[in-house]
Length: 370
Image (cartoon, rainbow, N blue to C red; front, side):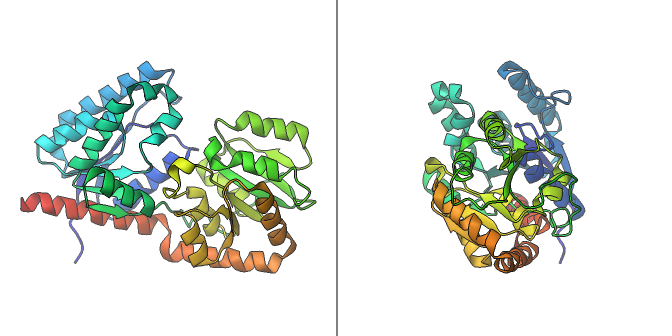
């Protein structure tokens, strides 16, 4: 029996900007719920088509957004909140009014302090605000099993469901058109560029003698490590190529034509809390991966047999794995086909969206029963 159409609010105090990982992770879920007949109203910051000009503008937008939601709160059967400590007023207000809140957790508290080191000065306050929201939540959607276990221990809320990220298998597909101007043979890294994505490991690997001759390393995206990538392009123009950030639907025009795709995360503080979009999108493109052997990544790669796992931060192992796949096109193609099949069967955004919709539906029914 189909569940009734629902009306919910999706709240993200982090800007949802096309070209960033957040955009896909948010909009694919929203579109999936809407495709199933739900009304989903989005409450996102609006910086006039650009980035916020500073912390004050962010705070103003977050306050304005939450005040607007407060005026319409009674119209919703549930709130779906992409976790943020400053969403505390909205979570508290919903709790007072008996409206269930489902929190989506994408990482431990430390993530906010990595992104915004100045916030460490107020660490007890920010952690306390986020922990309270998790404790109040009718349910928590966690994107990695290690994160699920941590949330249960830290918050005492046992209603935590693991539902990782995914891929749009209609956009990311093996027959995506090829972007003009690409090298004949290349490996790719795409996404955002914080250091914990393993970019330093990649830049070390491409300089090693084990790196396969004739294979270019192409970067797509932007972020903190961009200057290091641009320096590598200047130093090694025959090995490293940078395309900049591309619109979401154009990333596949590069990724689908790579010989290898990299998922080389290095972040000891997150050790079991990964669910990288690029892993599922690479699999959907039918491209084998070279990925870090950590929980959240390794079980997916092993189950699908879609790539080679390496120790975190091991540039030589990365170069050797890349050379192995480059030298054996048949092995690479077989891994790519297995990855695509797994993406179709288990890791599409439509499947992920339905699973999250079921979590929200259950929260609404429990609230009604009370």
